[in-house]
Length: 106
Image 1 (spheres, rainbow, N blue to C red):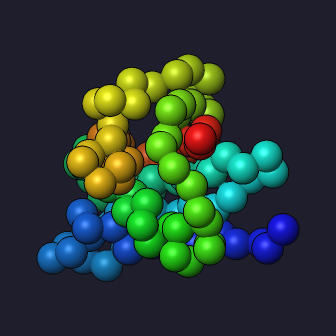
Image 2 (cartoon, one colour):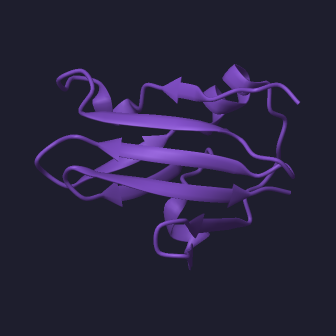
Image 3 (tube, rainbow, N blue to C red):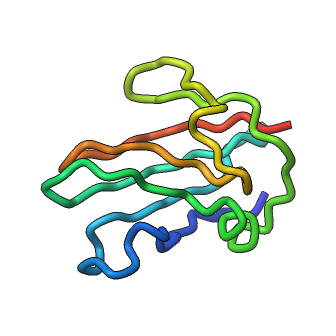
């Protein structure tokens, strides 16, 4: 399996100081995906992970995302509240924090 960890400039970073928010992601063994949503800012922000860019950068072909797990808190998140119409993942991240997510795919 190809080793890939893609750095994706999030839409939320457009018009802000470079590096305030970042999205990192890549494939895990078994077909799942790991996402790290980084907020270096002093305010909580909603960060969007553009899944299309992750698909392109890591050459991933996947369908619907049925399950998202917060790896820090070991809990399932509400997929319907986190996905936009294009199945991009959106999550509010506290200031100076990192959200670490595991996406299970179909």
